[in-house]
Amino acid sequence: MSEELNNKFINSFLWKFMEKFGYLGMQFGIQIVLARLLSPTDYGVLAIVNIMLGITIILVQSGLNIALIQKKDTDRLDYSTVFYFSLFISTILYTLLFFLAPII
Image (cartoon, rainbow, N blue to C red; front, side):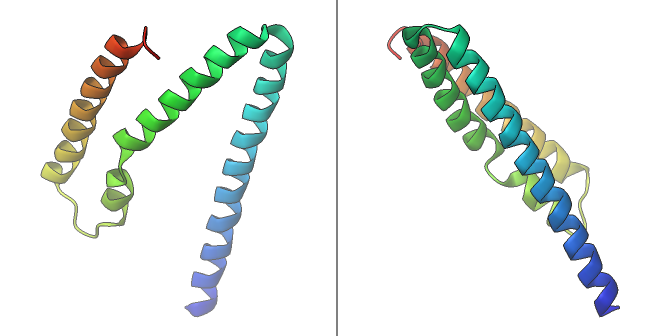
């Protein structure tokens, strides 16, 4: 049992590592292409937008999806709570970003 669990852990770790590495590699490649195509001013605006979206994504996820996956006995109430909470936070952050966009 212990060796099977160890193999699952290593397999999961490798898949997650490849997912993250692939995502960052693709993002890096896209950033290089955009840096070559856009003017420095436009690229700076795009970088600010990416930072704001990254912060928004972190706030929306807030770890609830991971907690939901790790919970042993989930029910429909748990799923709907996470869904509606994420929807509510997303709506608030979208509205906030929409009105602050000229300032940002």
